[in-house]
Image (cartoon, rainbow, N blue to C red; front, side, top):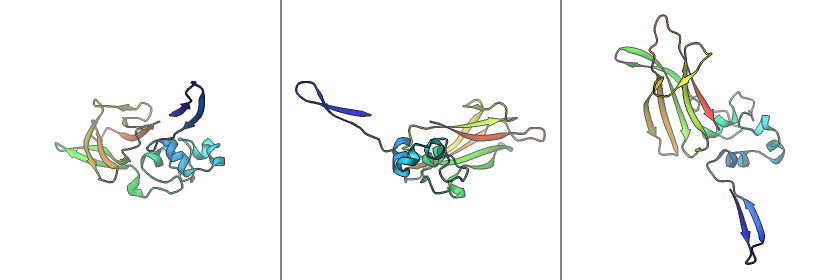
Amino acid sequence: PTFTATNDQGSDVASTEMILEGTYNYWFDVFFNEDEKQDPLVSGPEGDALGDGVLNIFKYVFAYPARLSPVPDGIPQFGTVFVDDKEYISLTYTYDITATDVTLTVRVSGGLDTWNSGPGFTTEISRESNLDGTETVVVRDNIPIGDEVTRFIQLLATY
């Protein structure tokens, strides 16, 4: 937000933009110098500052510095869960709960061409506070794995 101060005659005397902590812009401001901020391939949400294949938007939402590759436990983990003797693909991820300007959506697909999300397609199994400003979430597909069925699962970050 931008704040403007006015004098008693109603004239603007000062204006400043504040970058709120817990936003991508705050993370951006902390981890990039002025030259890097001009290059969206380095500092933009879809940029990759380290060149490690992890987009900045994910490093931000997973509470990682721009130039540190997440450890394996710090990125979404794919797995399976059993419910009523049926096996389902699942996705477990941990995210920074202060990153409220990003929406995380688990999506599933049977062929990579069409992705679906929401209660008709996925089920949240658990959401656990880690008491460090992060939460760990486990979501599963609603279609069980079978001999004739191929399923895919992914995490989409929308900024």
